[in-house]
Image (tube, rainbow, N blue to C red; front, side):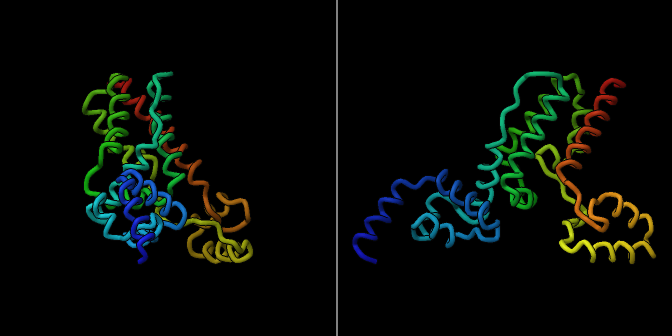
Length: 224
C-alpha cells in the first residue's frame, strides 16, 4: 500500500459511521442479494480494510440486525386520518411497500432473536391503533397472533409458485396433475392466465387476506 492509499483509507475511516456502514450493506443486498453481504465484500464497497468495519459493527450478526433496523426505520409513520381499520391497513401496507423495495429483509427478520427499536415501533403502532379503537388487551393479543409477520409487511408462501416460463410445459404439468389431483389442477388452471400452472400475484393475495383479517377483527370487537 502506498502512502497516498494509506492516507486515503485513514480519511475514509475518520468519516465512516455505523449508519454509513448499514446503508452500504443494505444497498449491497438490494443489488446483489443478501448472500453477497460479507464483511470483506462490504469493506471493498466502502474502500476500506475489512477490520475497520469492526469499529462500527461487532459481528456479522450485528450487521444483519442493523440492516433490518435500517430497513424498518424507512416504514412511514401513519397519520391519524380515518378509522382504525384504515389506519391499520396503511400501517401494514406501508411496511409491505418498504419490504418490497428490500426483498431480502423477511428472510433476515426470521433469523433474528429479538426485534430492534425500529421493528418495535411498528408493533407499537399496530398495538396503539387497536387499543385506541377500543380493543381489549386480550383481543389485541389475539389480533397480533392472527396477523403474525403480516403486521411487518410480509408472509411466507407455502410453495414457490413463480410463473413457468414455458406455457406449453406448464399446461402439460397441469394435465398430468389432473389425473391424480383433480382439485389442485382445477385451482391451478383457474388461477393463471396462461392456460397452465402459473404464479399468483402475491401482493393481491396479501391485501385480500389483510382485508379479511380486518373485517374479522371488527366483528370480534363489536361482539365483545
